[in-house]
Image: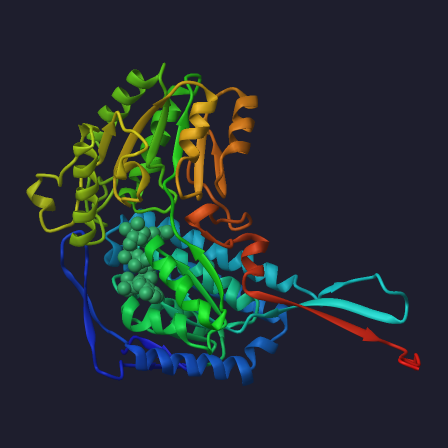
Length: 489
Ligand code: NDP
């Protein structure tokens, strides 16, 4: 069955291109999929534009849109195993992690389904007297280009597709060329749930051939992108000539601050999870450990001892605790950051190489790595390596901890570990990040906004603000009894 979905029909690429998808855990062939190009992107845009300008979806009552999203959530639950398996084969991620993601994704559709249903008829502005009906209504932005990465393929997609549809938009989705399968399954679920043709379109292909044309085309009203900072900057520039709305989620270099009074065992446990889950390929990874000088030696010794024991393996290895990197190129990039850190004076405490286990030789695995004695000027400290690499810096006192934590161009997330609730509140308040965890790491809920300060992005996903990204506010003023005023007489 072809994998591009345009105007409600499954189709192959105009130029007949295909791509092999291989599992990063062992290199096995997952499938050969259609690979679109600029002509397919243009066809999908035409379909999305037609569906927005003349189709039923934007005018569908919010409550009905909400019900459709709830049906999608139910289909995701019904087909959870197939979705999770497809996600794991594309990403190499452990099946159990993909299964958690599918629960989160169903919850995301459910959340935006309820939010849409509660949309109502706008906000009455009761300021101009009884003869005026003044109301602000929230309309869809229009045609959205949704561009998503490979680390959490369907989760990042759901954070865009669910609010875009809740608000009444139509869209063209371009997933990462490396991880297309759950996007294909999602299109099937949207169709089964009853979404009209043209409202959802899917074009597989590269960023250059499919993503870039979407960001430039005048028919697109909004670009929502999750991925790397360099690509985000290019997209911002490409959207400027036609003044598109943009929403960007560009990752982070997130500090995990551990004070001497932290609950030791929990702080070590979560510091490991913060950076090594999904082998560090997480935008909110706690990749910078800032540890109180007093606690440093005991904390890092324990952390390193446990990091050495983390078992690597493929999606279906039930003993594995984390998986491979996405590609050979990405592993080479991670290794280069580690090498640069060592050149600049960091001390390798563990990892720093691919595993030597012959069973893992065909996958893109890299050992959990801890670099001690790091300083803020090192590239491995300030750039996003997006791999299983933890840098350790010491601090003395609250002010230095906050200064080090904020010494980054990013501002996505961060955490503080202390049993002093006053200090926890103070530090949380001073961190320049969109999310701060106190004595925890990584939880998020669809009800709360997610996004970054500084160069971590523009706008927010999830929460009411995540829906507002996909809406235009329109003020409608109705004079119920117009009478001549004798203007200019
Ligand atoms: P990219 O930013 O290149 O890719 C994200 C998405 O954007 C993909 O669908 C990609 O297509 C597409 N894309 C690439 N170039 C363009 C363009 N000019 N116009 C429109 N779309 C484009 O991320 P990478 O996959 O290359 O990863 C690079 C780095 O980004 C990582 O090492 C990591 O640091 C960071 N990253 C951050 C993520 C986050 O969650 N914030 C997620 C993933 C990566 P395709 O890949 O198909 O070519």
